[in-house]
Image 1 (cartoon, helix red, strand yellow):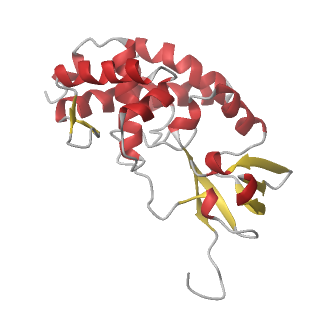
Image 2: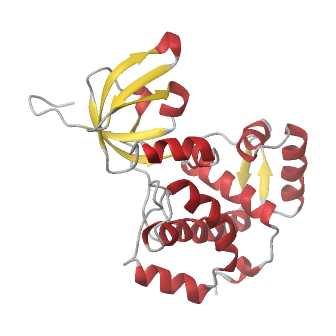
Length: 234
């Protein structure tokens, strides 16, 4: 009953914007048209025009500072889109064996054919997954981002932790996503910060096998659970 509104037929573009806004809000980020333009790889005027169309259709609302907020209607639709996309990524990765970048790219196509019946079968087949391969919570599972997980750029040299989440924003850069996949910078991987050079905007981490270089801006969009210190409370 509560999901009737989700059956509205949306264009792929609007679905992508809904998912982007939803992801940014979930990550605690302020959503503005300029940020969406960078995320969607379009010009600011194009992003602004789409946001205005979404406002007209009741999917988003704008406050006095032009921050974009999902309306209840928009949130319901966004959660449906995000759920299909993240389940699709999980299926394409875990069952079909596609790499991260390929699974993310193909999920944008595959998700549009995921009906409620297929969705339920995927959930059962994968034994009720709660996150996508990159750690984003799948809507409807109750999973959330743990607020104690810290961005990698806040770690000091010598600190260790376990990667738990990679921002959806980074997923839109296929070359970067492939780089992270190739070097095992992924949820569940234990890492140690080997070097941090703020003046150069660079961070080097060790993933157990090799040293991996990341820009601090990229590192800021990857969250990890800090290793607890046994000799005292942190």
